[in-house]
Amino acid sequence: MLLVKDEQKADQKTEEDRLPLQHVAIIMDGNGRWAKSRRLPKFAGHKKGADAVRGIVEACCDLDIKYLTLYAFSSENWNRPLEEVSDLMGLLKIYLTKEIDELHQKNIRISFIGSRNRLSKNIISLIDMAEEKTRNNDKLRLTLALNYGGQEEIVNATKQVAEQVKSGDLQVEDIDEKLFASHLYTGEIPEPDLIIRTSGEQRLSNFMLWQAAYAEFVFQDVFWPDFSRKQLCDAIDEYYKRDRRYGARP
Image (tube, rainbow, N blue to C red; front, top):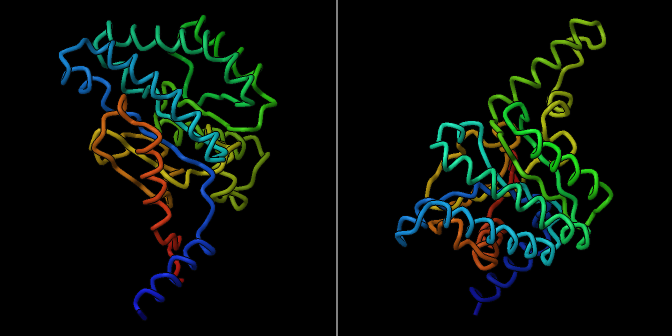
């Protein structure tokens, strides 16, 4: 009986004291292996993965999560076969063409992080259009990491800070974590509370290296095309079991 009471107290404390969850970031992995396991072309896996994005965006809106960042295409993905890269870019064009109106109607703001130097002009134009159209929406901030690399992001931020010091607009003594973070692609959004990776792999793969300093990680064995609201809720439940100390003691 005492044990039951203690467990109830523990649950109550967790409910009262747990930190809010406002930013979820997901490394969407396993499209190709999902397709291979079904003897389908990789494009089928990527298409099914794009469908999964729609469901997770809706789930985050329902769960009142304010920020969702998805690792859509890394700077290293250019090394994949040309046909696969072309398929991925084609899917991105379709998504930006067909989904933006619906996202806008649902009060969702979409933004992109990453370098645009290898993207085609028509994709850049669609990105600019999507960002501008949804700029004032505030239900959910959906960020797609496209042609993104965490190391490159840090190097670019370092160059910006160095240029300010060189021009005399910034003193070395004024450089701190907050100032540096403001020069990252994600300078406008909070750091992720929870990072999820699908497919069973357990690594960041050059994703949000600076921002992940105190994030909680959940790795799931499900391939991304099969990732649904249930898996998202399972990851969130796991997050709330964690004790986020940020290097301190409770």
